[in-house]
Length: 226
Length: 92
Image 1 (cartoon, each protein chain N blue to C red):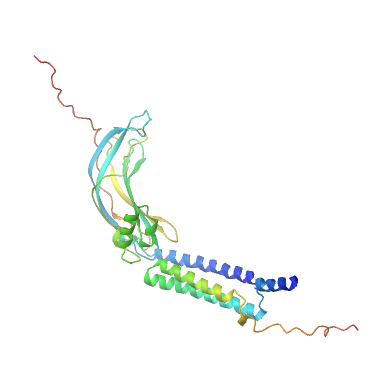
Image 2: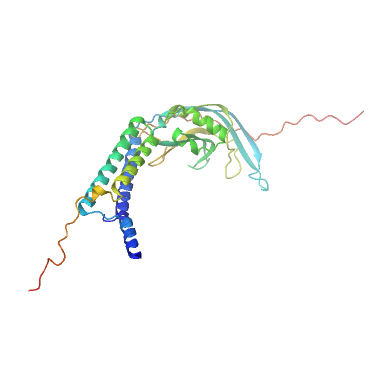
C-alpha cells in the first residue's frame, strides 16, 4: 500500500468482491419471492397445408398452422431482478408406437422489464412508447398479463417424417423462462419448489390435426357450344 | 537538473504515504466499500429497483477510490522518524 498503484489495485480487488457478494444476495431474493403463474390456452383454428422447407428443396412437407387463444397471468414473475420473461407456446403430441413425445414451438414472445427496455429489438417510435408505458416505475407486472384472441402462430410446425396431418392427442402448453439480471435462468416447473408454484392451468384439451387442406374443385364451365 | 525533475515525477507517480497512513487508507477503503454494498442492497430491495442499487454501489465505490487511493496529506501525518545519519553502530 506504499504507492498509488498498489492502493488502486487493492481497493479495486475488494470492490469486485463486494460486487460479487451483492450479486449473490440479489439473486437469492428471487428464491424468496413467490411465483404464481396461471393461464388458459385453447386452439381456435387448425389447418394442415403442404409446403417446402425452403425455396429450392425438392421435398414437400406437411405443415400445421395452429391458431390459439391465450389468457395468462405472468405478473408474479416480474421482480426487481427480472430482466426479461420469455413466454412460448408448444404443441405436443405422442409418437404412435413408441413412448416418445413430439414437441414443437408454435409461438413465442419476449416481455422486457422497464430496466431492460433499451435492449428490446424494436424501432425508435415503438421504443419511445414502450419506455413511456412504464411511467417511471421500476417494475411493471401488468406486462405479464397476456390476452391473445385467435393469435396467428409464429411458426408452422411439422414432424421429421414430413407428415403431420391427422395427428392425434395434440395439446398446447404454455411455458416461460425468466432471465434475471443476476443469478440463474429459470423455466416453468412441473411441481412447486419452495415459494415458486407450478404453472396453474396452461395446458389445452387434446385435439386432433385435420387432414391436408386441398383446394375445392370448382365445376369447370363446359366449352361445348352445342 | 534532469534528475531533480525525474525525482519529482517519481514522487507524484509513487504517491508514497507513511505506514500509519497506509493502514488507515486500507481500513477506510474496506469500510466504505462494505457500507456502499450494504446500502446498495437495502435501498435497492426496499425500492425494488435494481438500477438504483447499481448506481448507489458505483457511487460509493467512486467515493472510496477518491478518498483512499490518492496520497492525501492526512495520510502523511505520522512520518517515520529516522535517526540522524551515522548515529548508529560504532565500530568496537
